Image (cartoon, rainbow, N blue to C red; front, side, top):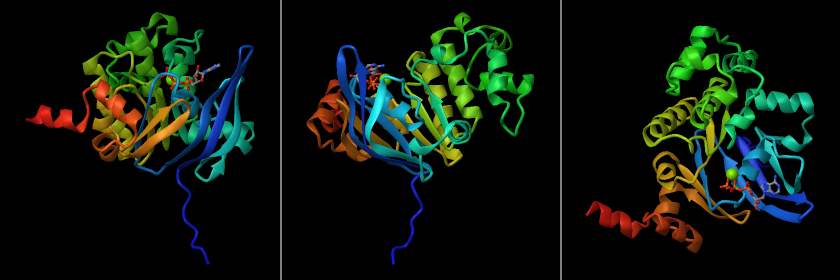
Length: 272
Ligand SMILES: Nc1ncnc2c1ncn2[C@@H]1O[C@H](COP(=O)(O)OP(=O)(O)OP(=O)(O)O)[C@@H](O)[C@H]1O
Ligand SMILES: [Mg+2]
């Protein structure tokens, strides 16, 4: 008899996807496997165009219409997301999956002031967000003058502010899985550190899992428990952070680390 094991929080198996346009077909994901357990902090790294955003979006079936999954499955909490109907998919996105997109301004509704859209987005939560709570929420992601920002429209805030609004919104929903696609790329170094610190601490303390797409390998090494390296739609290497960064097996991973002088040898030199 086989003992039933609990399904991983996120289980991607053999996922392949392609984009179709008038210029032809581009294979964006090739046979990707991934599993996330509560408490996992996974950094997804790899050159531009390697499929990181395509994978992130596929988790919540948020890919554009031109993207088609050609094989494989995505299960969240043991449920195949491909089989969900509209209401079930909305419930998944509301209750389980948090998503911080690579283009945060584009993800905000241009016709609504920041305060109003935060209130609307957070309305389904058990804990209501009144004005004071919204101010505290923005304050938490280091937005200065939160009272004023709540009254602005998305086109009136900077890219870095929009990223922090998107982060605050995703965190306030207390997701079980947070998918963050380059959530801090537009922030300056100190704010980035602080916001990442907040994001990772909240995720870790709530027992959720994080899939964090980043070009910042040093930050990934600092915060993530696991790393997945992608190239041309494929996973070239994945494992615990100290293994992948400390003893990279694939030449591509070594090249990525070399480019940043992050090889084990360079680390030794830095310590010396
Ligand atoms: N909407 C789209 N239509 C057609 N092709 C696309 C589309 N979005 C992405 N692609 C292609 O799919 C592949 C994977 O792109 P993806 O955006 O997932 O890469 P990425 O790793 O997120 O890159 P970056 O680091 O630049 O954000 C690339 O070849 C890209 O050109
Ligand atoms: Mg991307």
